Image 1 (cartoon, rainbow, N blue to C red):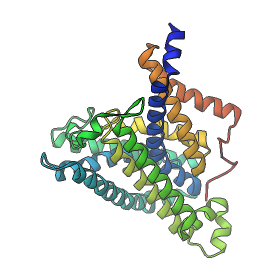
Image 2: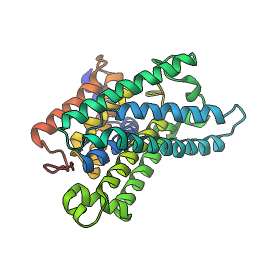
Image 3: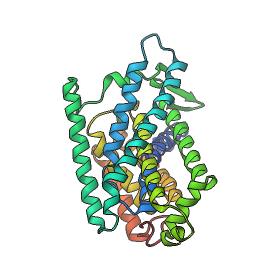
Amino acid sequence: MILETLLDFLTVSELGSVLVEGLAKAALYVMIASGLTLIFGLMGVLNFAHGSLTMVGAYLGGLVMVLTVSQATGTVARLALFFVAIVAVFGALTLLGGAIETSIIRPLYDRPPIYQILLTFGLTLVVDEIVRIVLSVYGMQPLSDWQAALATKPQFLREPVALGPVDVRWLAVFEIFVGALTVVAIWAFLTKTRYGLYIRAGSEDTEMASALGIDVRRVFTVVFALGIGLAGAAGTLLMWDQVWGASVPLAAETLLPAFIVVIVGGLGTFRGTVAASLVVGLTDAVMTWWFVNYVRFTGLPELMLFLVLVVTLIVRPQGLFGVEEVGGH
């Protein structure tokens, strides 16, 4: 039985399908975890509210789509409105992130890290409850995926497509495309812009960057705001994925893999986040295939992700591309 399943897994069609699904999962993970990486890389802040703000982004993105898409809206228009939703949610969450950093995070920079952890964890509880209250006011179920938002997805993204001998989901291809755009945009920002230079300088030596005239506090605000904006953009994409969907539990569902990716890649390194997203995404896809086709244990994919984390911490505690004592201020 195991041999037959293994031979089936090693066929071109199955391997190709698993590869595409793995890359799609990696694209989602890199979008979710990038903001967390930027925030810790410069500021040394472990933001436990990251998952909740991703969930808020999913609902805001869904709201934009529900308000603008009708039955008569065509495929091209829906895709255009989706990217409008991503930009709108990114902008809104960026402003929210800047407000959070200046009002409640900044006063704790000189305190021990446990203060920041407790604060962001408390922020998670507050945000989740606010979302629950808002949903209950409008008669929506907080524990179920928002079906109205899912219904705004173009029809072709609901159907499989044959790429040679491989059958894949169009949505998986779309997620890979959006994830790749996100990686290129972040790379260009970090390497080709003045603020990217400030961020890299600050993550290496905050005191020297301040001595050279860089307003590190302002850079902290910008980085935290952009990190939260990226979380919101990721949530907008998750809103269209049937596996995730806009719901209150999405906060916890995204926070755990985000931390796994950041730790495996190396705290505070974007290159490590991209590499770890590929490792975690492909591992998740392979284990999901085995769960569906052979192993009758529902927690297998999640268990393997934590196994990847444990092995990384044992073999290379600083992560794939991490260095000691990165992050902080």
